[in-house]
Length: 259
Length: 259
DNA sequence: TTTGGAGATT
DNA sequence: AATCTCCAAA
Image 1 (cartoon, each protein chain N blue to C red):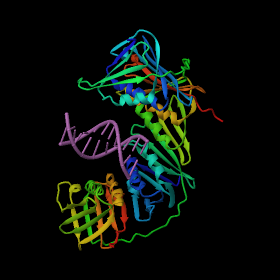
Image 2: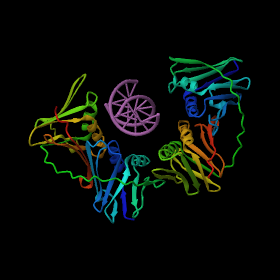
Image 3: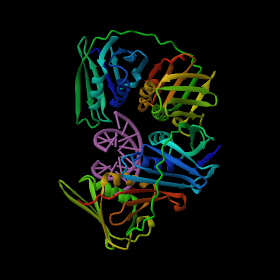
């Protein structure tokens, strides 16, 4: 057995796959002793998905040899659909086998679903993601970001984001009119209700709303989301797992350049 | 600024729009110093919607000059979807501007959504609604009316309403059988639980259930609904706002004439 | 724990 | 308009 990983909550991986499903068809899961990692362009090569599940996210993790396992995301979605919300997951890969095994166990151990998934060869266009120094880092409730994106996408295809010390403004211009939502920095008892802005320099940029909505659907992964903005640089949309040390799921999207 | 109206609870207008959405595509909001008014046939010219929001329904209301503002109801629905349940609303229209501005503010003022909606020219088929002397006026809990309509629409498309001093009977004949719900007059501690019947003459009439279900969805506007019935005359379904002086929303539906 | 209603999504 | 999911009440 080269890879054996046990996850307390299969639902974590289910959420990750759900978030990835609309963007990527097939992806490589890069396995090493550090954990699992995915880095993939979306099918239309406009957005980038970056997932890291550190070894600490698992109750048990063993990986003898670094390797890339190519999987079909749709199939993964179907597999995890079999899992109940409290199921645990065991992931196994034998040396050079052409399948990987998923085993979902209900909490009471009275129901075991398992699936043998065929692996696929995916040319891994390995990409470096430069560590950006964002001019603005905004942290807000992930549910609020999801709602803003969904509400505004009704009016148009392009969203302008303006961030300054006073707040962050999401705007869409469409045929029937122009919509804006402004969030001001906000303290709150629960950290997950806060809106905070770290601003070195005000930033205005525009993005294809379609992708933002897709990213925002990763909200179940975390109660908060972190937006990273810079002038003429890609937007980062990052969801840290409940325990940030366990990893994150992050999306990048190139801005629309003004004509 | 010709029109400026502040509403404590944006949700009131949201409910009104939701109730109107399924019936009308575009409507004129007639603004005067008395308040806002809408009178519109539904798209298939079978039903009629009549809305009155008196000036007193607003925390602030100013209208320098009577005017009709044509708006798309779907767009209004999308705008109010952005509002939280406790948001307040500011409605503004500048002299002869071709847009009207909606501004939703959360209670804590840390989230402002606003929308600039393009106005449209709608030929206003102005109609007089004759004050009917209904043979029967029935008042019942709006939730109960909603449930009756929803339950019975499962069995057929046409509802017969029979009202007499003994009670009001809703009947549907369908392929799988015939369903009846009878409500007898009922006293109750809370006025909104009462069922009362004012009967000058027993009435039997039939209506297209589809419209009744749509009307009944306005239930969030008021805990009670008033049905007005006459032989061979349109049914009135009226929801008075919690404070009746603030206005009402009313629907009319022509009866199906027996073949 | 199970059932119903409400809200949201396609 | 129909389905599905989530949340709340019994």
